[in-house]
Length: 355
Image 1 (cartoon, helix red, strand yellow):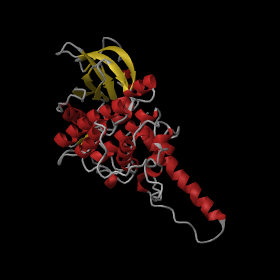
Image 2 (tube, one colour):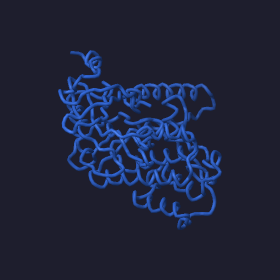
Image 3 (tube, one colour):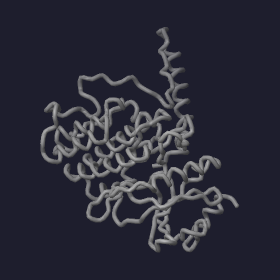
Image 4 (tube, one colour):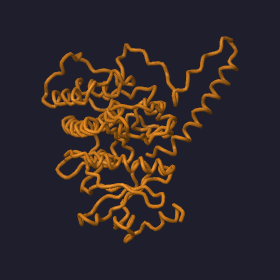
């Protein structure tokens, strides 16, 4: 039975693997996954069932790694992590099941409220940073898809991190779901190292993504809002967002400085630990000045006196050296070839990264 035919059977009343009953269609997830409301057979309560895109089931090994990743996540216990229950495969259809909570996803919350007040945004970032710290500290789990569509604002303005479908454990001896050379994640909220296709990522990748979310809550708009996924990935590697002060004059210089540090292109310049970030966030929340911070607003991503870092291209493609001749023709040819390489790599990205 083909995957397309199987997907057509996911209607109310159908039971995935004979266990999790489909109750109704809920919508689309951030990675092109289909979200259903279902019923847990043992708990007798509603759950969220995410059916991943067929591309995720690239062979038996990938299926097993996906299931292993979600089950590792299910072991995490934190007040700001939406509990995951199980993951499975039915004839090549990957799905994972998590708790169901009432509330709005942060993407909708921002649309409803516009720019958030600084204190509210800081509280949300503290909660999600603490959840990501728990995942990394306990299981060396990297979320790899931190964005407004994976943060749920539950009743009582209680932030919860959801959707660990792309999570990966970096514990020694754990197999990787990532295939070398492929880019995993959402280009609008992707760290430069993810865009480069680096294999050995750390919590600093999630920190960068959370910094973009922080920016968006306060600006009322994404840090990068290009339509093309190629442009988005290039921006993550080579461009700085416009100054947050241009969109929200109420944000303090210290808060801008924290965001700057979270979204440094060079991961070595970000916070060394989640604890260090949370400490600074709590200082700002208390209305106290940050230790050692200059009393000025920084240009987003770098100080005005700093020169932009050398441009990078997808999958660590070496920079093209300019020709020594003064003729413009070789430069045009090189530019065209470079664009062709970027477009081909973008085709790979489109398979693995949805909005």
